[in-house]
Length: 325
Image (cartoon, rainbow, N blue to C red; front, side):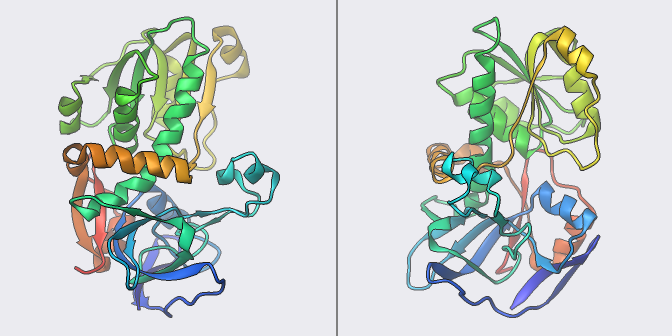
């Protein structure tokens, strides 16, 4: 089968690869239809891995002799360790992540546990590539709202840094959450338009001011974004690190300053579960027109190496690999 294989840092090859085979009774072989191109894929490509690996974890696939489409939960936890027993499956001591440390979806076929494939019915099945990132955002927003309960105000001002897909999904969920009553604004360093903001009626800040935001959600994953978040948040406020920082980046603030300003810092790492995926599917199903505008360029598998080594997605959209193109 055709597959995009990461062999070393910044080297992704399209080549013939052995078709997957089931090794456990609960596994199935699925046909891959679409895969979203995530910034995590780009970061893994830049860093390289210790072994050849097929990346791709935002997978839409189909099953033989079954109608419809399925979204992949790429996190395969053991269900037995102390973290799994507490429901923290993303922190499983034996975690396998398809498309991260095990073969994923940038291929014509994928092998996965049957219970990791979630059926959905959208008028446009390509929207399924947004289920996995949206499910992670569901968990992120849950952690943000829990942190909001620490604040002195019941109507917080929230600044989301980063108008990419992570910032888009976090903003959407906060804006639609019945458990959040506050004001949301978005800041992005690019000059590119972000049409989805108008759909939500949310203001875009050109020059953010300090001491305005009770909550700052850093969604860009950049060192500059993190420094900006910590500079802008009010005393007694909350910073959520949601964008994935590169390894080796230090927190640009001293423990003394955190203490004196009484800043709370929370993070949110992945966290796709049956519950969050069901919530993501329901959100997309209820507002397909909004999520449709988040689909960006469609590319064939052959163009993926260029995409991963020359990262340039359209702001606020997800590039999609079409395996049939």
